[in-house]
Length: 75
Image (cartoon, rainbow, N blue to C red; front, side, top):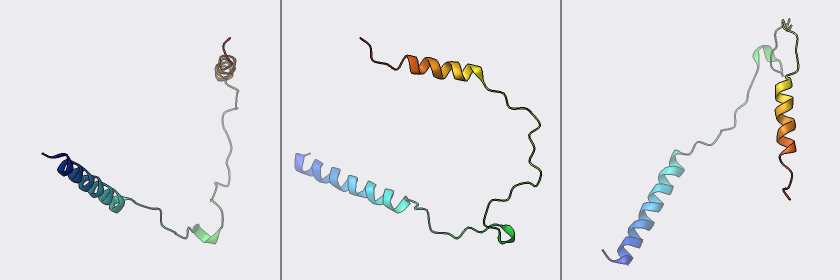
């Protein structure tokens, strides 16, 4: 196969792939979102209580501290 023919087939294949990708691409369409009962915000439960007390995670804090300490320049 000649080089010109290979280039031509490559270009045709690339254009075909781009065309199929363009046709399959889904763009988000414009929609009007509405809540129930005409409220303009997300509905929340009337009673939203936490049953468990929030406690800080000390292991995560230690991990973050060690990552910051190791991020400096070496030398």
